[in-house]
Length: 143
Length: 131
Image 1 (tube, rainbow over the protein chains, first blue to last red):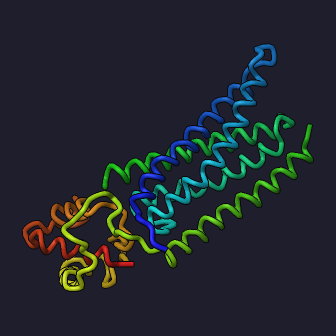
Image 2: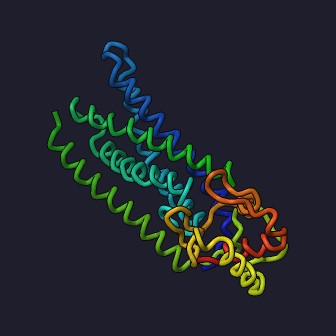
């Protein structure tokens, strides 16, 4: 199999921003939905937005990860900025997929304690994604 | 409370996440062993001709590498205690050339006076030939 690597550079750039933005949007929507009182009338809508954002974000990680692997010719860790990028990418990928699956199955039938834990994981993942994005940017700027 | 549903969902979520991570790393292994890339330069920067197809240039680069770089980066460029592995570099050729020429403050000496442009090109050809 022979593939032009320039293709993967473009695809990785095009696909990575969706899961990053959707994860952060999910964290924002679900946090607001959790904080706001029932009487505000927006709670259910915010949780619905968070629900779809996390599922789409989790799905979006697969093309981002695959194109990244092709871009680096299958390097899982690497060194320097690429190593730092991957040290944040891999935990973010695993946790985001887990959160997406959990939320897809539980839907809106979550307990308060369960959702608190979910929110902690979601905020942690948003942080990991931001750090991975930062080091990805460093890779581009330094190349 | 939906503790039972949440617990079951958590179990399945952990299984899917583990499978996804394993699948990604398995894909990495597959890419490393089965995929051939048309160009070694995927950063969009071109050098004269295909430098990695010139055994003479690569051999020359290997010679310079052994003289000036192997002490820190190791004989096979796999890195040492104080210098990184140089296989699978994901920075551009221009960036490699700049690093060789100007060095890295407090980390790597500069070689601008020791090697001319063609010699640096041969070093890049050698580094790009590493797999």
